[in-house]
Image (cartoon, rainbow, N blue to C red; front, top):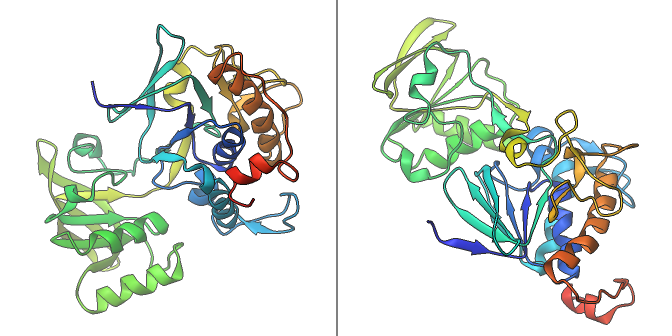
Length: 341
């Protein structure tokens, strides 16, 4: 068995609701470890619409999705949460002492007395590009995320896409890959203008290749790529390729959580509105992934759910301990935890 990471609470999902859960749990002296399939905190806020303004966060008339996540990260910093990114929580089992063991798709092992599911609509799953036979190369030379940069060192790498993920990894992997070719169906991008400008500057210096077009065919044997065919305005081009990263967007699926034994209601997790507990004692669900009569899928609602969940979780983590309700405005002990006393 891999080394076991022990904590008070494992949080599945590092979107805004999962992040705020760290704050509410931290006020009650519970340590948190968050697991997310994405490569950064923020969930769909940062992955799908980072620059989109949000208008219904109390006291913030307008804040970008990324700005909200940045503020939440600042707010929870005093509690020193731990993160495991680029991982899917795949397994959950109950141990003899009542605690839980959570495992990931990379066989990491976490043990905690409480599990909080804050996975939004579920886990993000990459969309497979419409390239014939791509399945044979997946996991061997075609990857949908970067978990270890060293796996791409010295390779002829083709990156496909026009969003932030495609541009970020083009810039990050260019120094270590043998050659990077970025392929996008048009010369305009959805990514950060700064990243686009840096990519074009490298292209002008012949330090990477950029091609307008679409990958239509892959060549190779035993799952290992040799080349990719790109169909562009001037016809087909054969590009040397031993690794490929396609970024064609993401879709939401409940994923392995559906096999964890919690009761489901139309692919959501029913909870009570006192504790936001699931049908399995010790497992809570907050945010868009839960369901109860009158449920509103709002970030604001998720924040409220987290506050009540944390009170119930404390009784699981520290049974028998008396909980004294306190306000951050007047409690010296809470202010010390936040580093403002």
